[in-house]
Image (cartoon, rainbow, N blue to C red; front, top):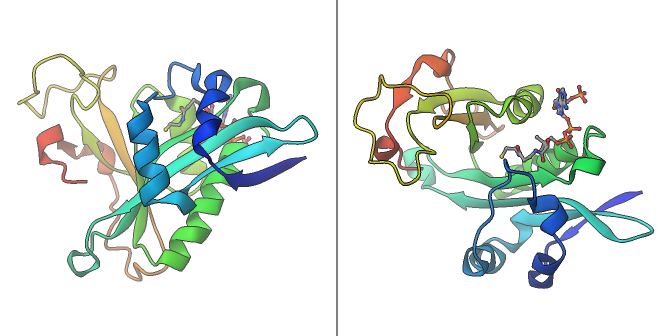
Length: 190
Ligand SMILES: CC(C)(COP(=O)(O)OP(=O)(O)OC[C@H]1O[C@@H](n2cnc3c(N)ncnc32)[C@H](O)[C@@H]1OP(=O)(O)O)[C@@H](O)C(=O)NCCC(=O)NCCS
């Protein structure tokens, strides 16, 4: 049986099996701590009983101003340990975030996913997310800052995906055909 519980700092010592996936971003302790301090209700884990193993987690934050139609929930990481995949755990973690976000009255939920991360993209599409724009060179790391937004490269580009929430009554925060909208990382505020 799976239950969802708040993430705690000491969980960092037990999540290596979850974080081993190359598509799961690993952060330093101060980054995780900042999320726990600032957005504790948006950082939670799925736990498998009776063993108590952490099978996955959601790490998210809120940002932006409502007056600018920017107030939203951002998924920083959602990941599931490989042996617990394909049993709707990631879907549950995301749907839980939607419920919390509706209570917190954010306008939409967004995330960045690698263009090559087909499973991640399928997960989000199944949950009603769509591509808002393609961020060219977002995962370029040490390479120089990209300055040509037409120089698309599947290996280092990100899709910025969004799902609008009930507060965004006219769906102003999402768009169609977003995969064809190319932007540079320095043009992305959130
Ligand atoms: C992407 C990831 C989170 C999916 O976790 P999961 O718990 O297996 O996902 P779910 O069981 O909720 O699957 C939801 C949908 O995603 C798609 N999907 C997920 N894994 C799939 C696979 N191996 N093959 C085909 N479709 C898949 C399906 O549409 C699935 O719905 P369905 O089972 O009804 O067909 C998991 O593979 C993972 O942790 N990957 C590494 C980290 C990552 O990429 N995170 C997302 C980007 S931030």
